[in-house]
Length: 115
Length: 113
Image 1 (tube, each protein chain N blue to C red):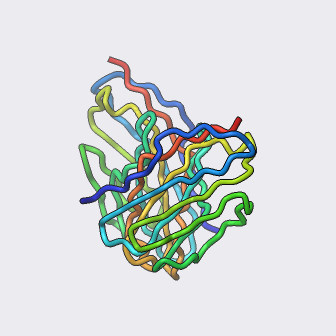
Image 2: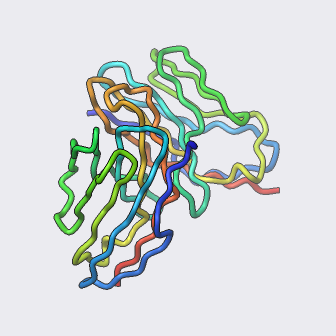
Image 3: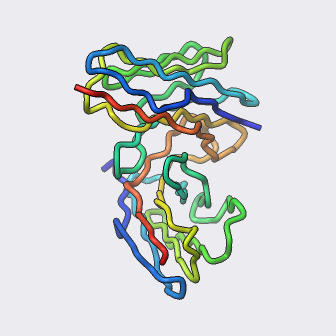
């Protein structure tokens, strides 16, 4: 299984809502990532988890809260988002983090719209 | 810091044309280099990679050679198809425990029949 799955595929939420994005992989990868991608732009790294511990937070606002319950699952909890947070949210995973040649496998993304 | 410069798009080609998308990089140390492809409405897929100088990555008819002397990793394909229409991202990742992928801005490719 070389797949990263993400749910939901699409999400529309109001600025006062609380929602969560889910990501799952069964490749035995111990690094997992959240990216945000705006239209016609490359993905921007938000968070990195290494061995289920948060290792990188790219100064992301606290209205985004990541969680890694186990080595296969990664969640992104959303609360009080702004319309400018509307984007495609991509999850990725890779093998041992410190080796540069280990490619990241990306999921299909969740298209988020904040009204 | 690390950076990737990609050819500005969009690029429009006829089917069976030769494709080159230029990519140059700046990095400390010895990066690994990647080309990712993103089809409309989808996530990114790894197209090919090269991990050291003079390595050639290849997949689905696409090729790219890691050129340390020119700090380049240009993507080429001899005969493109309509199904190759997508956005292509060049990216690098360095050693030293750096988990970050540094992406280029992406090149949108459209192939017309």
